[in-house]
Amino acid sequence: MPFVAQHIRDARNHLRRNDPVMREIVQRVGPFTAKTRRDRFASLAGAIVAQQISGKAARSIWDRLVASLEPDKLTAESIDRRSLEQLREVGISRQKGTYLKDLAARVVAGEVHLSTLGRMSDEEVTAELTQIKGIGRWTAQMFLIFTLGRLDVLPVDDHGVRTAIHRAYNLRKLPDAQRIEKIAMPWRPYASVASWYLWRSLEE
Image (tube, rainbow, N blue to C red; front, side, top):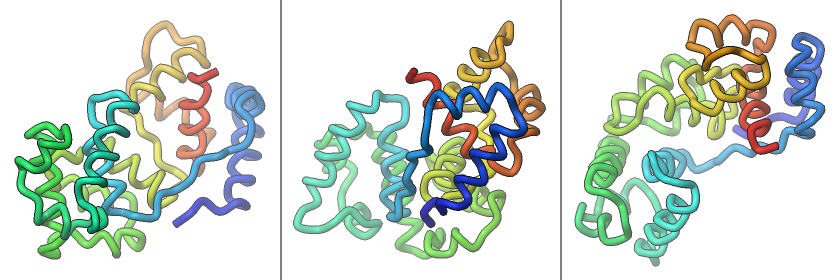
């Protein structure tokens, strides 16, 4: 579901009120502009394609993949019908092709129900998605934030979040998960919004 404007206003006010460091970041970065992605299958497929490569390279491969499927659209069914060799022809590695095929096959077979994820808890969504090859906890967390619009997800293993906290809070070294959880206590229940602001702070 999309982010609700009132919820975002509440989140920004909460962060500014409860954490002076986050107050400065919110003020500097400005309005929250993240959008959720409605197509759940495409969101997961895109996350697999983008693993461990630059954003520019990922977009190029994604565009070639979508073009190769025409006149069909990118769906679980259209990916399931493609061979691994056809996926490799557009620049997808054999490993990522295997991951995409596993995702598509599980959705087509009804083993993974993307349409019902919105009614699940964060933990249930993570458990459902991480049974798919190539989808780990981080990818599930990105899906929770940017596809389901969950407001209180804290990706403690994300390098960008760790780096931004290290800089903003003047820490001697990159924080571990336990340290991040402690720092993030004042952000609850809006850790997703805080994480987005941390990511954006690195672009300043």
